[in-house]
Length: 194
Image (cartoon, rainbow, N blue to C red):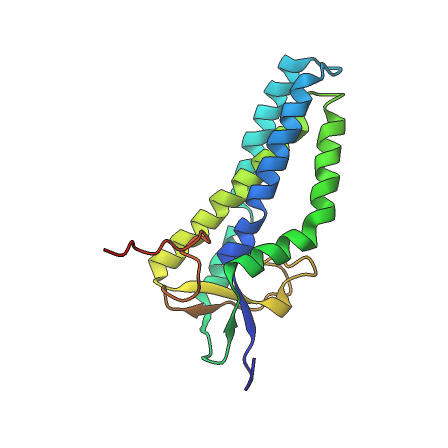
């Protein structure tokens, strides 16, 4: 990063980074929870968990969309001196920054199964699905504007998350082909060579 350049991370990748860990930890916790009869019984626990799954997915997917839109509208073009962070580095930083929270959430979900089987695990899985949906929505914003949205790494919180947090003043944009992630934060699929 020379001549005033900044380290930039993809907004959609930061959003998507927590989706897989939350999903898999939630599914595992729910699976363990189904094995425990719990205080409420399996049927009530699973039904309550299904309701919480849907609520969590909707709340996470639709939360702060106005802030994301405002930041996207006011985004400035990235400088040629800015350094674009790889998708794998962004995801790894998020997971390292949140590993203890993920572990505590998993343990709480497994422990909660003794009260209401599978409920907390399905809640965690719903948060993961919500993040996938939000990343897909950010991808639609990017495709509509024919740009990729980036956030300065030093504006992310200590856990390398919150791409629309208070510290984030604006996004930067690049062309749709920049970086190693497609719109929405998924791995970019390169066309097969013929």
